[in-house]
Length: 97
Image 1 (cartoon, rainbow, N blue to C red):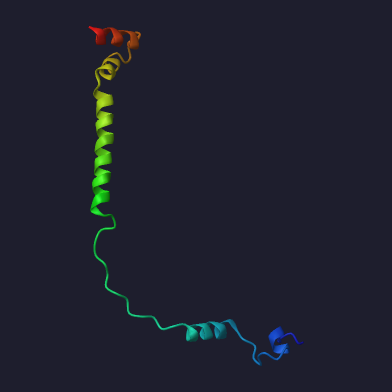
Image 2 (image 1 turned 30 degrees about the horizontal axis):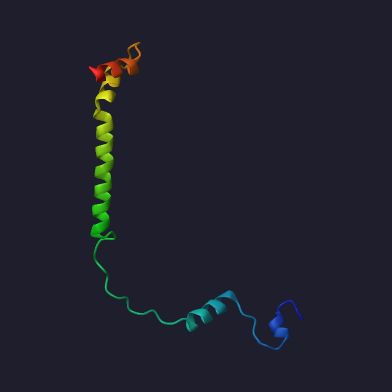
């Protein structure tokens, strides 16, 4: 077997030494021809039900945040920030009165 001879040539399967270009051309020749593409489907990726569910979830998240931020206890704590007092004790006293 010489240097320019592959195993398949020595076995008698083929007579030629194939280059990479020859192999690519053979693959392209055997590949099916491209078909015409179908019509483009217009529309959104998300359905309307998904959009409504996301909007509802964001509304619930915002409502919980707003309630926790505006609750009387939190406003009492925020009003005492920076002061050297026991804020929890004062807010508990303020909530009872």
